[in-house]
Length: 458
Image (cartoon, rainbow, N blue to C red; front, side):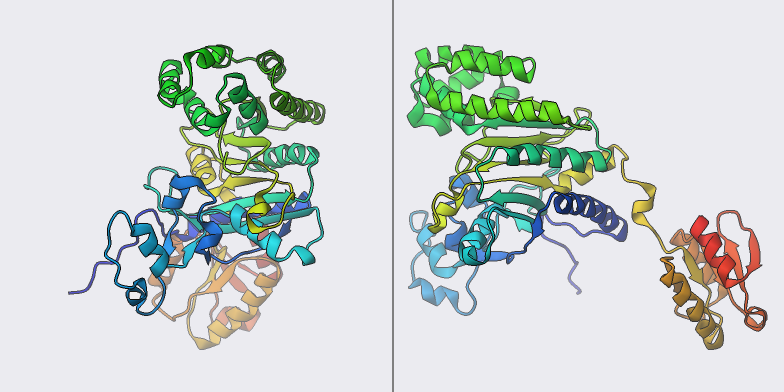
């Protein structure tokens, strides 16, 4: 009995229409990247395990897909019994490669490995798939594309300003209005932890604070207490729980809250600089918003932190994010190289555009003209015309078989091809073509020049 075909959970097949829509997003993002001066690179789909492991925290490490060594890998494990205690040791014995979890750590590896060939500051973009052993759900897949842009070798805050403009450029080009670019700064989070006497519990504190919109103030406080943060310290956070208003008013409140933290004040200055620049430059369709609860990527972010939210009418997680990392390349031995980068979540952007019906009709551009095949003589005559149509940028093709007319016409209908061209003895003799418009049903005998003109104008 034949095996029923299937694909792994969290992966997808894409039909021609979906691929065309994805390419529309890819091309929009790629065009913006290149307009802003970013250069493309590519890295392998899998890396050495030690390149990836330990770079994303415990949870991230669990989500990395490991690749079994080739050959009799079990014999190399020295007969170790599989137990909970030695499972990590067993994994390292039978697997020394892993699928990349994101594009940022491989990029850091690339910079260090090729540092003598790179001109700094180095602006790179990368559009490639990544893999995570996550639980699949709406907008979350095990295989998906990331579209990243990074600058390394510059500490200038003008880079953060440019990235906000880049986000705005892409979402404006996609006609996606109502996108919010949320920003915070790691220095502010460190400053808050310092003020409440919890500098040694920065990660616990920020993980709890990050849940404010989801679980509410009281549960956040309870979680902080359970992590060993004192009630006195938590009471000092009270102004944060009600922090709202404009970017400027929140900055003013933060100055009061963090008046005893030098680190926190630096973070405020950086955010104020970025906001002032964006206020002067303006944004087309997006909004820049300060969100002090934003705490993504604390394992390597050191300055600005970005997260992009879809329009409020769509229930969707973040559709982009990024931040400043002052020493990411340090994990590979290249110290003090500052970088900042952002990422676009292609799959979620796709779902948002689909839900809001924002894909242009021309995205899935179909074959515009199908030439009916009546036999070898007619086919050759048709292919000469098809060659000219293609040179004019018209999508045209010949039905491959001299099948019954009804079958060929049905093929054109099912593929929604707007024009059908018929060539018989009479057309060959007069060097003309019979052009049938499938929607209206009208049919005319035309020259090749007229044929090209009519199809182009449609």
